Image 1: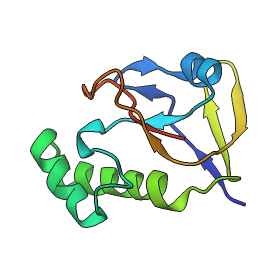
Image 2: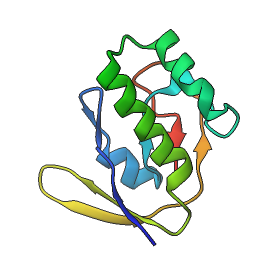
Image 3: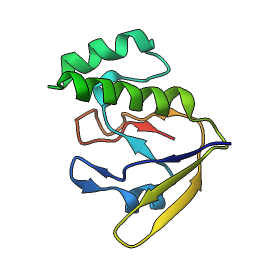
Image 4: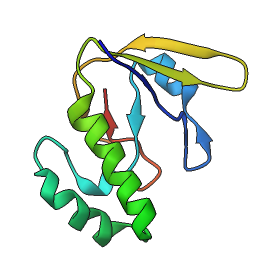
Length: 111
């Protein structure tokens, strides 16, 4: 079992309420597509095509995608925080939900 911390503010919007109400956690970078369907060696190419990232941001984002898509496992735990509380939850399987679109502010990578 592992414990992870996920930033709950994505593109300046605090997502704690939606994470708690809809029982998921997620990260941005929807332009990469489904992490289970896109080989990790293509993630960098997808990021460069869709986002203006410098080398440090690119490396950090690739590490986040790897953690979220590959390292986290069903049964691990996650912490999310807002201004008043920290919440603990158990992590489920990864899924990609692009039903609302894939704009940069949408959270398509989910667990």
